[in-house]
Image (cartoon, rainbow, N blue to C red; front, side, top):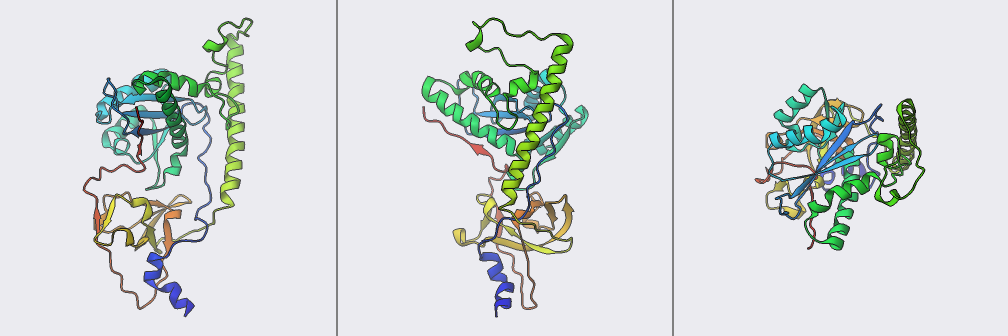
Length: 343
């Protein structure tokens, strides 16, 4: 009886998962040098007098230094490319790699062609798994808090305060690297207004500055490795190993798709999982490519293991696909951040 319950296809699709999430933590490798970057957008901001309503957040994975670029949500890819060259390439050179979510602007043919021409490798998160770009997410949370504070304190347009927010962020102590991003990037502390009246600051020149910068980077990499190890140890206590083989069939978790998929008249009572779908390729240790039906061809077909549930087959099963529709408003952007400020 219990065996039959475990293989009941309805039970497999509707029952909540009470086990620890699948997939041990696999941190991104620590960069060898500066400006291998992550990027994301904050959208839905109040429109300013300069017509800005979004922020492009770009963060160096090694030093944690960041640029906050005010943009218009409708800016063309040409405009974003010009801004990228002017504000990132001009100051830091061409990044070795970029980690981002699957925003249509980043997955477009134009953006891919531009980065290939520059010699930059693009790395995208799997579908509905923004933790891949967790660094940008954490930076955005910090920036949102700063924006709320500045708007409440100073009023006015948020883009008036954005340069000082960037300055404050880059000169604040970052626990994972045990120093401020500015210090990690330039090898010395920033001379800020609070210390302009202090005399006797040590001056570093020539070889000394190079040696000090290299020393700082070595410290940063050591601190990042220690921080990654601590986080992996903590996260893995609440995770379990789960592996599948090519040819296995799995169900796909629905909850991250809310607002994207429509399930006929079922609404909130729609199944927790859809499928089963066949695994056609393993992508790295924690992601799998699925053979999705025609209705889901607009969705990227690689998923993190935590979004999958093993299908337990039984001869009595009759597989019926639910009435699935892709939202007509689908562009589509995964985990796109929207932010409101009361003014």
